[in-house]
Length: 326
View 1 (cartoon, rainbow, N blue to C red):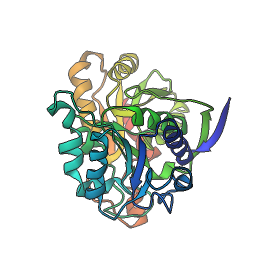
View 2: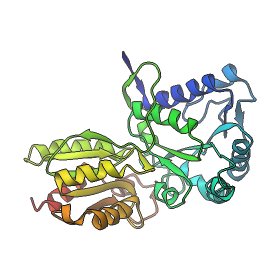
View 3: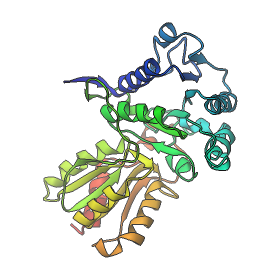
View 4: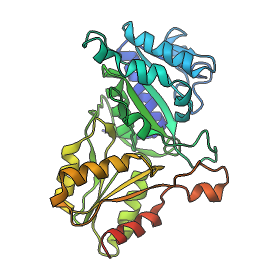
C-alpha cells in the first residue's frame, strides 16, 4: 500500500512517528511550536506533545543550537530547525567544534544524536542571505553526516534514520520541493544513511546529483534520450556518508560522468566527487568529469538574475552533449 503526499508532509510524518515512538525525541527552533514552523512542518505538534517536547526559541541560532547539542549529550534526541541553512553562519561553534567532534574527543564515551534541519536553495527570491546551498560547507567537517533528500519517500525515510542515528546529522531540504507531491509507502519506512539511489538507468553517461537538481537531471535525461543519448541519474541522497560503491558501479557502466549541483562551483561537492572519481577510477573514464554547478556569485534578489544563477535543464543538456562530443 502507498499514498501520495507532499515532501513537507513526508518530513512531518517521519518526525511525528519518531516523536511517538521515542519520548527522548524533542523539537526546538524559531516558530516551531505555536506557528508550526515557517513551512508548516510541525503544525499541531504542540497540542499533541506539549511545550516540553516542541519548543519555540528566541531568534538566537547560536543559543538554541548550543542548547540542542547539550540536550543530545544528556541523553535526548533533539531535532532543531534553522529557518534557513544560511543561518549556520551564526552558530558554527556548537555544530562544527562541539557536536562534530565530541564522540572522537571522548574516545566514543559520549554520543551526540542531534539533527539539524534546514531549508536550502534558491528560487524564492529570498536574496543573498536566504538562498544559498551550503552542503559543501558541512561535508568538509569530519564528524557530521549530511543528508539531502529529493523525493517524499526518501525525505521520510531519511529523517527517521537521521533521528535514530547516534551522530550529528545535518538534514537539508530544498524549499522548492516542499509542495511537490509524490507516492510514499504506508507504514514504517526507513532509508539507510549512506545509500544512493538510481533514479534513472542509462548506459551512455552518469549524472551524479542530489536534492532539487535530481528533477532537472531527469528532465534533461528525457530530452537527451530523444537525441539518442541514454543517461543514468544517480541520486546520492546522503553526501556523508558517501555511497562510493554506487558511484563506482555507475561510472564503470557508463564511463562518462557529470556532477550536478545548485551550490556554487568553486569548492563544491562536485569538485570533491570529480577528484575522487579521477583519482580512483581514471582508467574507467572515457572523458574528463564534467562539473555543472551554480555560478560563483552571491544569490541575487532579481528574478531574472537568480534564474540564471544555478543550472537548469537546458544547461544540463548542453554540458552533457559537450561531455560526449555529441
